[in-house]
Length: 160
View (cartoon, rainbow, N blue to C red):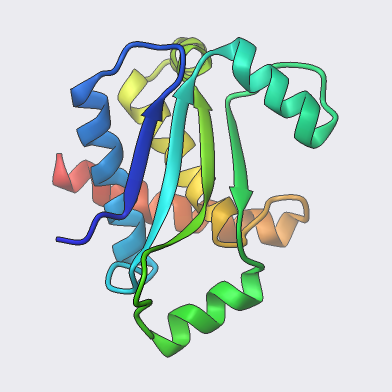
């Protein structure tokens, strides 16, 4: 089975259950978007509010911590072409990087009244859709992105 995600733990303890859970989430995203056989992968870093704050300030000029950051390597039109052509890379290639503040995910799970797993899954799926070119600035784009996120989250519920 092709590896679709590289997961790093930065300044937090490695958690094998979280690692396995994250791999399953990304694999589900790849399958949903027909990327699972194209030799792409995503890099995911699980980290602290301090580190994500620094990255948010450096790359977005926003001086506060956040829950998730996404750094795509391709434009949406390029991703759409890749998916349409279904041409497998010879060498594995990164689609982008996602950084998640695990502590922020825990806080938001409590705030929104649902499980850590549900919030973590949402952050990862949300980050994935940013990586492949979706956004939520315009209302119509937000609707499309949310619908795609909900499809994957529903499939994840069925898998668990």
